[in-house]
Length: 380
Image (cartoon, rainbow, N blue to C red; front, top):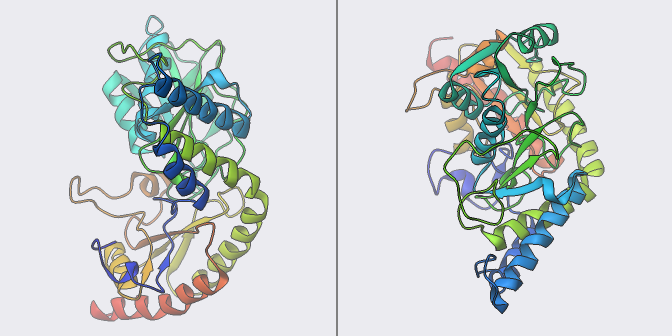
């Protein structure tokens, strides 16, 4: 959004940026408010309020484990998805430090993976095809090289929605696999083959500031950061117990309604893909079939992505630009560049659980005129 109180915050606005953050699920809101009165104490202590907090934290871990099909002792809560990525990826690397410091990852991984791998020592980037799907043979070959500590492969891409073949990739023996599932957790079942997984609660309708880290029982994982005296040795700092419980409640609700919501989302996104592709000089990117059900990105030739976002916001429609050159880096999207796609004029829309066909039709009605007007402003 262009500002904190702009047009897309007004009544009747359409929010199509769930991939950045899903609105708080009503179940999460109710759970959070109730838990604030009972989960404020330090769950490490032995007095009554602390025991209450510990029960809530254990309950949150139990719910998340059941939703994701994992063991309760494999679940930890962090302060964000980025922290879960850092702890999961670097913890696996730390556990195999004697093997080497190579971290192999797909070129389209989230920047948090790129940054963590570069910080650790020897990142090795593997290319993708035009849909953003990793080149499996190259990934397997890179994993077999001497000194490889860990391989990172996201479950689904946060910009274009392409789902990666996590369960199909056969890595070199003993090389652990880290999976960034921040974009997919709750929306899709987890892949089966992983040593550690990261998730982010605000992506599925939980409160912001809660990440989920899964570490497989038996995985060689060691904290890459200074030791902490918390009960959960994989997390750091004071757990936000009410927020963790709210995140778990939202995940449970989202998983329960997932099949119905995904079917509706796929139908709406198919409509968007068809109608957007009919606009001249517009290219829809990402895998058309193996993708997240609620997300699509397209590139508009001769149009600036930030200008598109701003103009749509003026119409009360909130979207994201997957190609945005941020003020801090001035770099185009590394995901789109790796795919060989146009890195300017991109728009990503992602549906919330309550997005209606009317919302989508409103966006589709406005978009062609916005694109034409912006092209006209540059003489096209």
